[in-house]
Amino acid sequence: MGLRMMMAGCLLAATATMAMAQMGASGLDKGPAVGTVAEPSRAFDSQLSLIEGEMMSAVKTMPAEKFDFAPSAAIFVPDQKTKFDAVRSFGQQAVHVAGANYFFGASISGQKPDVDVAAIEKLTKKDDIVKALAASFAFVHKAIGTLTPANVFVVVKSPEPGFQTRGTMAEFAVAHAYDHYGQMVEYLRMNGMVPPASAQ
Image 1 (cartoon, one colour):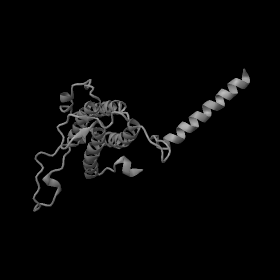
Image 2 (cartoon, rainbow, N blue to C red):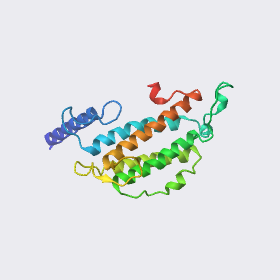
Image 3 (tube, rainbow, N blue to C red):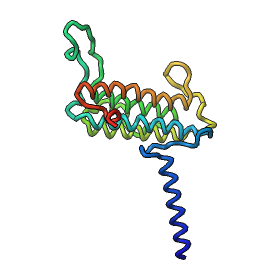
Image 4 (tube, one colour):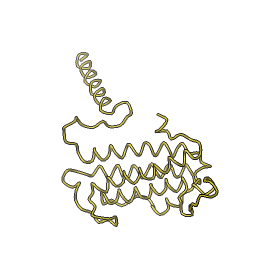
């Protein structure tokens, strides 16, 4: 019995070591070996995890009282012509991504969001926005989990330009989040803060 327990312990330790090696120091999935074919769900999910980590850290870093910050003409020299009437605030950037995540997730999987997406756009408090954004990323992860080699390039109905497939909508979700993350990074720097991803 003791020998069996020792062997089971060694096997468990080896499995944990292999899993940690795959995840790497950052905690992100390092994926299968180079030259092998990855599952579509795993490949897209790894990319979503990257931007999720960067965006969530940025949103948590911005102080609550700065969530209504948006660039304005006041930050430029007087003679420079600028228009910022429709520019989103930091908080609005985050809720926009949250709402869009539900759109992308539903397009990928066909599953309806389990929240009132329209209500997300009305959120103003930091804690509520952070919670909504995290939940929206979870929804996209779940949707991406439905991708298989057989369905990843099935064409879906979408208002976006060109034609879209389940896979391209997953890619679109990642690209869209990076677009707004880039803007949020500028907002942080305008307020004297270094984005966490840049501080590493």
